[in-house]
Length: 250
Image (cartoon, rainbow, N blue to C red; front, side):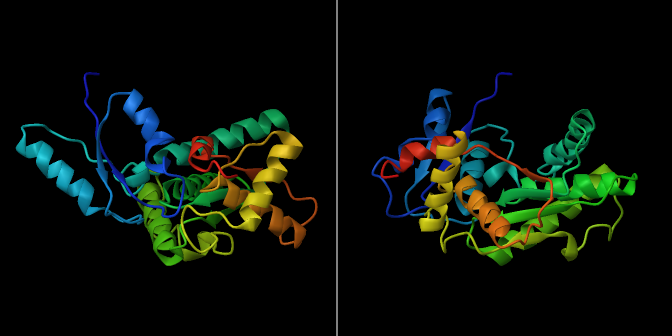
């Protein structure tokens, strides 16, 4: 398409491997030719960042016409649409498999994945589908900020796919705050135990930043019977394995 890519790599996690800021997604970005600006003084946050706004201004001043995409492509007018469509893909595959998933488990940080699911399944309900529960496992450790962003993106997405104002409310956003380990990007013993369990039983590979924490939540909720016996649970694995390269001590 002839597009250039300029991105900001922020410093979000302290106390990790020396190569943390050069592997994983940022390594792929280098291979794909992105113009990368590293901001060592920045900190974790899901809000629109001044570092990215500054980059946009620099590009405009240089004569470029940049298309702005925030962290996670989440708090963006189109951020939730992909996973709203995913909800209908799930319904199609359920028919093929002869199963209905009453509970969806998904990691939540910047919010658009969960928000899109909430909006998509809400639209499906309005068209006659059975009600189901989308449970987000927070990995941001900034729970109110993530909750508010998920709700905002879900409402925004709903307005674009045919839902009415008020169709999505706070009651639709279930965000569990027990498994984030207190800080973004750092796993606790429960996270690591869940990662090892998945890897050693099913070669199910998760990461210590996102999916390890959501898997820990799923396992714990099952142990505590918070997810009743006989439930059909769909665990949304969103990737993250590349992050393992930055945690060589695991």
